[in-house]
Length: 246
Image (tube, rainbow, N blue to C red; front, side, top):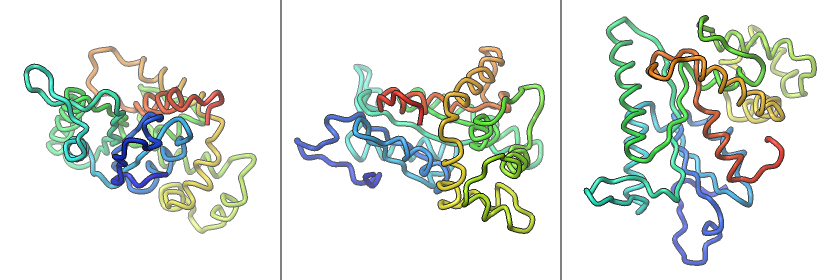
């Protein structure tokens, strides 16, 4: 996979025959590891990790595209991302802090998504966490009940009927839990990513059902649990022309 900052510019580059995805990830490990897996002969997937959350993520994405000549202007002079390039921001809405802090972050979360869309950037947001997407590979989520996603994933991975050898190894750890033991690059790739392969279609269907359970005028900050990661995954599968779900 190409380095995210090394955009080739020669006229005969192989990327001309591919669809380019540039994905700005809040996380520096799990999200780049997950999305990078979708790259194949049809699509180039450049994941740029550790891009912070919300408006900082969107700003970094737009500035990066400006610096690499990926911006077009309309008749009014408004700048947008070139439509030929698939630019996505991935961030979540960690709900923590006092009530005033929560209200400020709710505003920033909604505004970041609106700003990105105006600039031609798509957002695969999650509320509360990216791991909501992981959870949907195993079970449905209900908007009427807030879930402690990490605790639920801990229970699920402890009870998997056919753990692979890497999971068997970490399950021996004292006080094993998902957040502590499965978010390193190696364990996420060899355990989490490995064990959710083949469940992508289920996750997409569950994410759609959950998303559609909210009314159309519900703000993103009010959709919890919810994740739009399925939209990015659908695009990666479509442009990657994968007949089977990865």
